[in-house]
Amino acid sequence: MKNAVKWIDIVYLMVLGVTLGLVLTLGILVAPVVFHTNSYVGDNLLSHFQMGLLMTAMFLKSNYFLNAVAILIILREAYDYKLFKRDRWVLPSAATAVLMIFLFTLYYTKKIVSMQALGAAVTQSETFQNIHKASEFDFKLLALSLVLLLGRRLYLQCKG
Image (tube, rainbow, N blue to C red; front, side, top):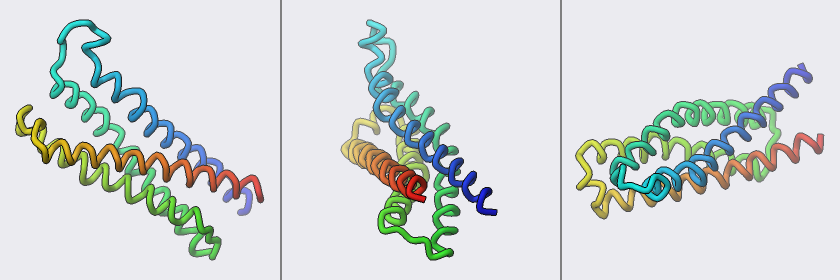
């Protein structure tokens, strides 16, 4: 049984690492390239609205994985909590990661998609801009909470 828990922890750490990689890749690599497509292509091939639609499509696909990871985090951390294995860094960072995932996937993405469906003019509104900025902040908090959770879990794993 102890060996099985160790393998579960290894898989859990790998999933956290992949998730952190996904969040950083989307936020640091993909978004800047997508939103500056015209500077790479040289023509005004896509409007800012069309670039946003492409980015949204990528987020919609990643949201399925993120939601699955949120459920995995809940299950894994609830198991330790039930066994009274509590750490002052793990629980807050896990809770923050889950909250940020669900806020991003279930609120911000859906709100942005519904506003994009109303047309390009709506995406120029102050309301859309505020929602978009909040979603970016949410994604940054998600990355930070994943770094803390993964780092602390790795430390605890190595410590024994």
